[in-house]
Amino acid sequence: MSFGRPGTFDNWKVSPPARGSFPLDHDGECKTFMISYLKCLKANAADNGVCRPESRKYLECRMDHGLMTRDDMANLGLGDVGTQHTASAPINPPDAATSTTRI
Amino acid sequence: MSFASSSRSAFRAIANACPSCSRSALPSMRSQAVPAARAGPSKSSRHFASTTPRKATAAAGPVESEMQRAARRSMELSRERMYAERAQRSRTIMMYSAGSLFLALGVTYAAVPAYRAFCSATGFSGVPITDPARFSPDRLYTNEEAQGRKRITVHFEATASDTLPWTFSPQQRSVRVLPGETALAFYTAKNLGKEDLIGIATYNMTPEKIAPYFAKVECFCFEEQKIRAGEEVDLPVFFFIDRDIMDEPQMDCIDDVVLSYTFFRARRNDKGHAVPDASDEVVLRSQGFENYEHAKPIAASA
Image (tube, rainbow over all chains, first blue to last red; front, side):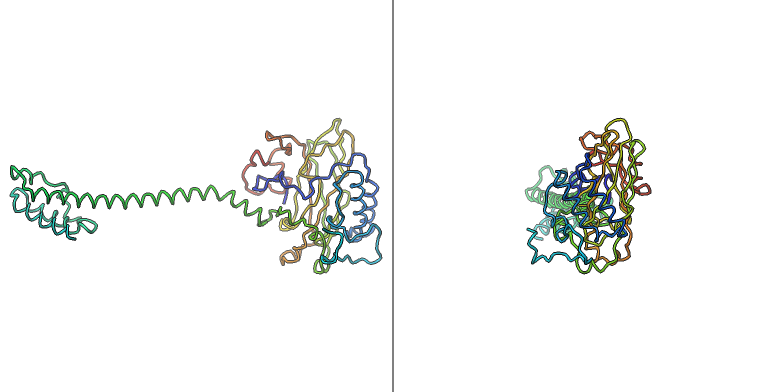
């Protein structure tokens, strides 16, 4: 629920979020992608579904600049999202049987 | 039973041979011999009689007859046996009670970590499940059911501790997500101080019942973040709300979630772990725990 509580059996230092902590982007290499994501959110009433291409682009930028361990986008929940906006809004999860991107 | 009858006859022999034995002593001995196989003599007969063999039997005649000696020995043996049996039973009872006492004590000691383990494993009462399987790739997508739901609005809040001269604020007010959909959110922090400072963030989630379902894939908490003097950085949070929330009827009405972060100056505790450099009350207050009763953090895990 929160970090810094009185000690529990599962020490938070031992099990942080799945991929740990983002390294800090000191040089602002991915700032443009962040701004485009934020603009998209503002334009779409903070609808995450519409702005997923932007978040994909931001994470790809982070990976390119060594600010995030490189991983398949499908493992990050963005496997069904292209880098361009699609006309149709509904997001269908990739079918487990037919997906080829996941292991 | 046979030895009881033999002791009975032995008593009769002694009684007849011993004039100085008072008749009052006899009933005690008899009642003692007869239920030798049972628990022991009744209380009423034991008021004035002692259980040890009376010296009078030996004093009666100058030489004790063989029969008298045998009788007395068998009597003593039966008494010894009775006492031994009673002692054995008492020892057993004492062992059982001592054992159950220590067992109860042990259970009281084990209960606290056992409860915490149970809470971490099952996510009971708001403790997040930290099972690595919950981040398996197929969990990071919505399903048909989740898409039918109204989007959950996640609001963001940020506070920086007074001892940390940083400005810390969210870049967006809120993000609307579906359960299972991964989302990105940004905070920004600027170090207004004259030197590089290390901060560590604690976070809190409201309402509490969302806590087991709110999973962070990657964020900026848990580890110290060093920001150079005068520098401004963007701090992203990559999270999702587990789609199992659809199975929970009490979660149907949750439409708003507040995720709040507080940055503290970091210091190292004696285990070398980075911890917030603020008093426990302040840290707990930042998480909304000020009204809860809890034990002090243990040095290793604070």
